[in-house]
Image 1: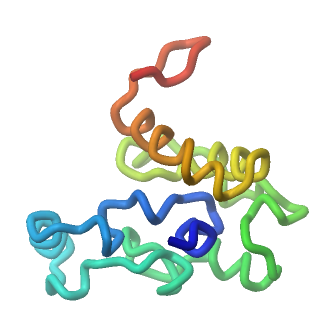
Image 2 (image 1 turned 30 degrees about the vertical axis):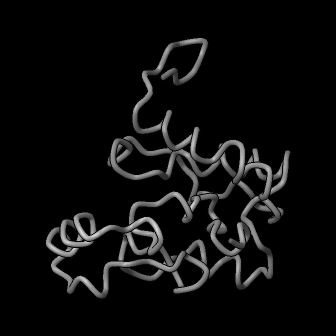
Length: 141
């Protein structure tokens, strides 16, 4: 598995996403097809870089367009990082992983995409969706 290709420029870990083709089983495929009003064949995602954006928002991705225009692999490699596209927002924070992006990008910059992908990405996702926030300690499982 190519971790660079399966990590979105914005910091999302495509390889851990429920819609990533290797993570889909028939139950999930049917559930997502019904939820998004798609055929089951169109649900599976190959990753942001491979298909031109995140399957979860089903549209053009300004962040992906921006990194391509600036010829960088990740947003943190841009002199304008973090830009206004990373402004935190409460709306949808319980459903969308936008708030993970800055953290992941900082960790990728610090330890590299391979080490982050192997040692941290799944744990970050688990804490984000299942953890409880403890002031002064961050999310705890």
